[in-house]
Length: 122
Image (cartoon, rainbow, N blue to C red):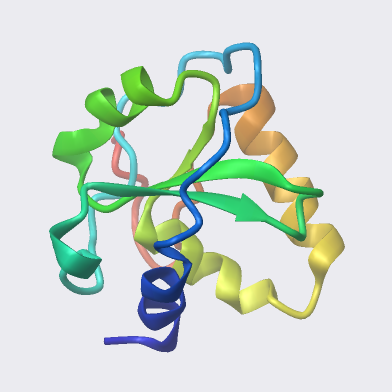
């Protein structure tokens, strides 16, 4: 399991707090589907409090099959899938870039697709 997966597992206890108010635009129909390991402790998703994003909650959904359930449980929260987080690791030393990509996801309901493969919605 990657270091990121271990960090997510450690962050598991930080699930309190209400999601941000408002709703995001409808996302692309098919998020990235590749997964990098088993979800920690059989979880479907984790609600995380991001220090980088000034305390904004983000939702890490482990499998596409739980996407709608996660959206209903946390409306308006920006959703990430593990492949998107893995892609963000490429720019981990550029917090402004991560914030910019997050704003794009939030505004347009976009998915971050690894540059090494075709978009899942094609």
